[in-house]
Length: 150
Image (cartoon, rainbow, N blue to C red; front, top):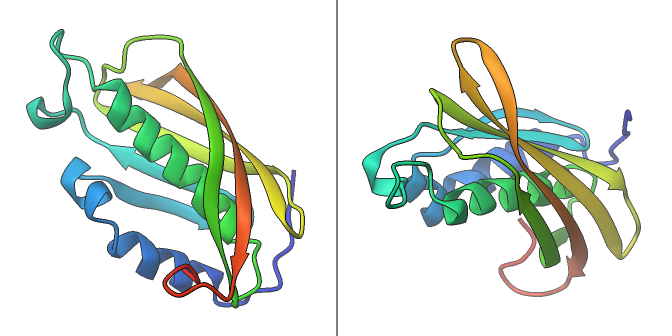
């Protein structure tokens, strides 16, 4: 699905906001792709973000999936609006193990107040991708609230 955005500066806005996220820095996450209605975030497995079996922790997978969905929604918002996640559901369908974990967030339906987004999370190994998680989220547009415009 191709989306149009009213916000010509959406990519700079998203990159600046992402750079302010302490959790993404802690996870070692990188913003890979930004397009209208689509954002990709990646992490590399490391002991600091693993669980007891050596897989990337589900909390880390959920965090990059939520951020990818939120930034996909933000890419379609006017410059004076921000977004906050109001709810999400994530299905962890396979262990998060590989060379890189990639979250691809995309807007399913953009609305003035609520936006429905979905993120597919893949484990990449040797150039092959395997689906490891699926997140569905509802994002709320926020206007006129201090600190929530980005």
